[in-house]
Image (tube, rainbow, N blue to C red; front, top):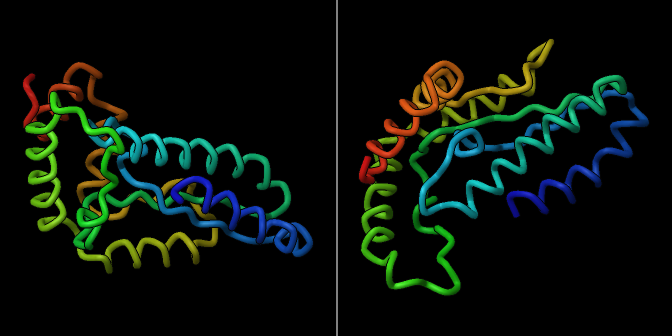
Amino acid sequence: MNVFGVLRVTNAVLPTMRRQRKGRIINISSIVGLIPAPYKALYASTKHALEGYSESLDHELRTLGIRVVLVEPGFTRTSFEENLTRPDRSLAAYDSVRVDMEVHMRKDVESGDAPEVVAETVVKAATAAVPRRRYAAGRLARQVRIMRRLVPESAFDKSLRKHNHLPI
């Protein structure tokens, strides 16, 4: 759904937007579209794909008056963790780590931003006279975007592993 649903909806609305020669497509990505997500590789890969698709499509459509923007939330207080995708073939070697990661995810979500933060960011992205390509939704999302750009890779990697309670 994170990728193919976006593709289907985008393909459905683009003919009208092209005829109008205006429009704005807002895709909900995640900070996980910018960084690794240990033990959530499938989810992270869908968000990475959405980032690349949206950025490329924005360049293709801009001359037609259509913009594609990304909203990138961090942890948000929703029921997200209740709907985590489980592996179809669980490997016993990862069982204890996976349980720890799920506990950690629940804590991150509980202390995350209110859903209104994301909604306000979507409104900002939808109404901006000159839209940016990316809108970080919430303090953590802004911090992660800045760190990813400015912090050396080895230091970022160490920080990510520490945050996820993984051996450094």
